Image (tube, rainbow, N blue to C red; front, side):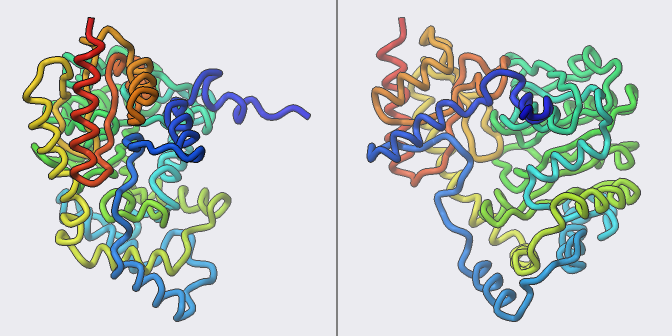
Length: 390
């Protein structure tokens, strides 16, 4: 039997970017010790108080079907959070709770793209972006965001690719680069979206992890509220990756239709998990800062190591849990460097090429092991780069 073109074509006929990660996990499964710096998975567990709230809710019987749009309490909490952080008035009618940010990305593009519509996204990109766009029947079109521009898209970059497009997917703070988009960048995004009549899908799942600068949501720019869908998540902000709680915030009409889509796809998020998320948001900034603190520390440790040499460059690491390192001085591609580092030292990092052509010659390092292990791994990476440099 023949499978659909949509499902067999998700990766565009090539690699899905996870080859190095899969190789590292295979080594671990075989009993080899590997320092795992590939994916954005916290090295701490979900806070016990959140787990206790989840247990209480489940024990009290909130284990049946939950309301598809999300519980009123959680939608209200997310709306209040967005209003406070952005200044854009937001109510529960502007919010749909989803099974994680990835589900929100998929649903949002379903909402704005018809079969065959062109959907823009920035390169470098989170590895699932192109497949998500293909999965909804859209035609992915990348916008090159180059290292010399700190991987930030300009108005001109977007305008050059915008003719005939329907949507633009942006991500700040950015995965994989760790870059936080400047006000000029966000205003350029807004200008392009308005001039070319684009929906803006804004992935803001790292909005609590800001080390330098300020997070600016495109939804806050004049004229953008009606054409922006914001993607949020509890995964990074509250170390709840496995709980799968995300959201879409946007215009009421769009949310109404997205609720219909959720009814026919995910049918909501378990109630006891939503109750735990509601509890977590009620803890305010203190808990979010506790979750983010290890990455702030490790960023400082990494900056100190990298400042002592001139072989490995650091892309401005202003947010998120990653460092993007420029290893072009070694003469190797990101793919080759990451593979050789894994073979020689059992340190796993993601090749820049996993995130698009613009990140070629770079590697992404997730700051997701305890401080001393992170220092050793990064110093080993730097020493390895020095050894193999031509």
